[in-house]
Length: 289
Length: 310
Image 1: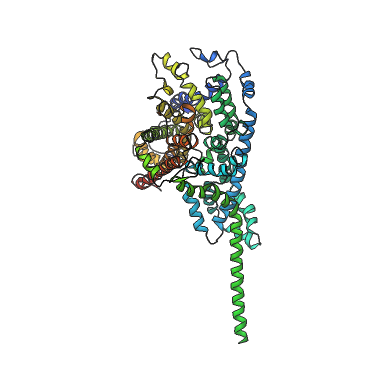
Image 2: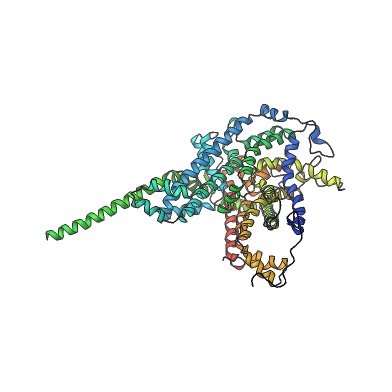
């Protein structure tokens, strides 16, 4: 009965395993995808051109001759290796500190009963909607008073303890069924053991999403490091790029080489681990600007 | 008697034990909480309170802060540059968010099909989201270059002899930044829309097809309502993020020409860290908060009229 559906729809004609409609869709998608990628292509292309070739009309995409020395010059005019290292130290430390302390705090909020819990959590929630720009001015004044301007602790500490991370992980921990821990409690496990051996291993997706986006956000962050540093030696990559733009305002080959360098690590990791980025966004809703 | 004493003492011993275990839990809890809580108090909570006070002062960080009451907020009301800044920011949000979301939905619907190269397309649309805004703002500054930029070269080639000078033009600089931002944000919304689309039960479409609904009807009567909670989420997040635009305005135009791209956060930055008017800049930051807060609350209030959760 079920096999013999009356008047079967004629199967659409297939071309290379897809319907004609699908290919029409693809033909529309290709130019838009090219438009999306164009700025990146143009960036790489310009970064490999000679200073004069940049101003040619009509513009060409394949540089001739290819000038790799734009990249070596970049490291001569500004300490780009140092910028790299600074960005790595800052984004790495903020991520480790942030995820670790948020996870611990989230465990307390999600699993323990203690006086002051709800009031404290409300305090965390209340600051979630306050934009970073409100806090940046008092933080700048605080760091200046402490004599911390232009130091790693200024770049790292104020960025590391986000209310958002704690909130996100608390929500996630609440979805983990309590029965798993009951068994551990019967066995006499301490809260620390439950946290490290039951909760954390079950929270992989949330922890990795938070880690990926904390790192990404801090690697790309600009306003905050711009405000709390003032020497070239303490600049992160984004601030270094801005310095480069200030000094070589129209040296497009250099500016583009710098941009390529700043993007390269993040884009490489993204292309290798696309799945985790996408999953992370849908899980947490972070990552947008 | 003895029995009584005995019993009451066991009871109180039990209560003591209970109390002791509660005290231990509290100690444990604060142990877990402390590292994060200290950082949160020092760098978020107390600064928020301090920011409230600072906005009622004049403070250039050289002389002691001076209490001026509501003077900073009153000054905002008459500050024509600030009015311009507010208008720019709203134009930016209204120009970026709806367009970006509509395009993202279209792309998500296309990518929700079984098509060749799906992963490639998704990566292409998403790449700008992970890219540093400073780096891509630099290349867009170059693309928008009035004389040698890629865009104007292309426009020239298709016969437009006097294309706009984009970032140098008071009229076109803000649209240029909006175009760049749309490009950068599509991928984020697309990913959320894709997830939303994948949770629409396919049998709804099949049923509609059997009832003879065409593609447009299925879109309007199934896709749109089934996606409404995703759309709402994307809208709220995009609006909040867009009100805080800074990097593009700083790198591409420095707020110019003639304040044409001066946005709220850029203006806050200028007053705080170039003019060192901490009080006035903080008052602006609170206005930013108030705008975001009100706009978000309004969106939540009106969601019931168009968002379906089920």
